[in-house]
Length: 113
View 1 (cartoon, rainbow, N blue to C red):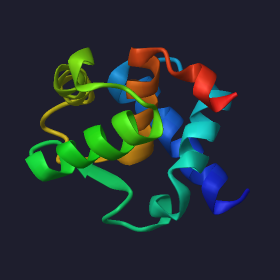
View 2 (view 1 turned 180 degrees about the vertical axis):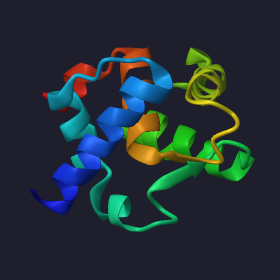
View 3 (view 1 turned 180 degrees about the horizontal axis):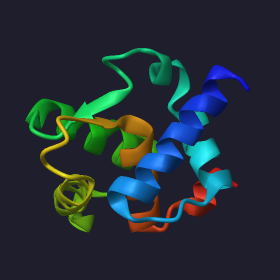
């Protein structure tokens, strides 16, 4: 099993156990691949839910730039909901899991086909 496959399994486990979601493994794989090499870097592979600059980066780079969403679609509210569901007590949240949850929230699965 490759390192990426191991990480995808870890992300799937987090979705199942911590968040209570049954992951679409094909979509999770595509979202993880879309994160690029950042998944292998300890700092870049996570999102700090309390760091406003980090959350702004998720909004600008992932939701607006990559998926073409606009500010009017309550991006901040969606990010806050995902962070809340992931668990505020969880200091660092896996970027691929946060991106997967946002993808599902906004129905962006078509962008990964």
